[in-house]
Length: 187
Image (cartoon, rainbow, N blue to C red):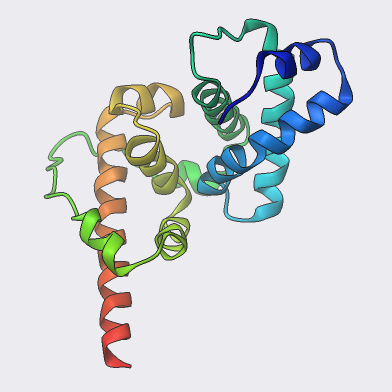
């Protein structure tokens, strides 16, 4: 994503046309992040707008030595995590338990093999089918590259619980992929 310094300066000055152009350029990246963390498009779009306003409010803090795409991704993920913390519901609180003791790391799923069998939309649908907390932790770990210690701090859970959610998500994804692969062979 190439964003020129002139566009950013115009946005800092509050020029609406420039802000609209920046929104159009950032939309695909931000929406893909939001859709990983939200189940429906309306919620994702609402979070995208909150995140984009935060990006505009903090443009004066942007350092050009950092890639702009990475900077906006980080802000968007933080907005989603902040919203999660603020709006935890009872179901998500009940959904996890501290499994730090006795946790065993499973063999990883061969996601390269999954890529050969399923397209991106199918894989995204599988991830969306995961329980909310497991989906959040899996996305932070496997997609966004956070460490378990970071995830634990961000979501207010233990490292063991973070590891459990990743392991659980991998196992569920593997099951979903196997069911889908078996059902496509039957046809």
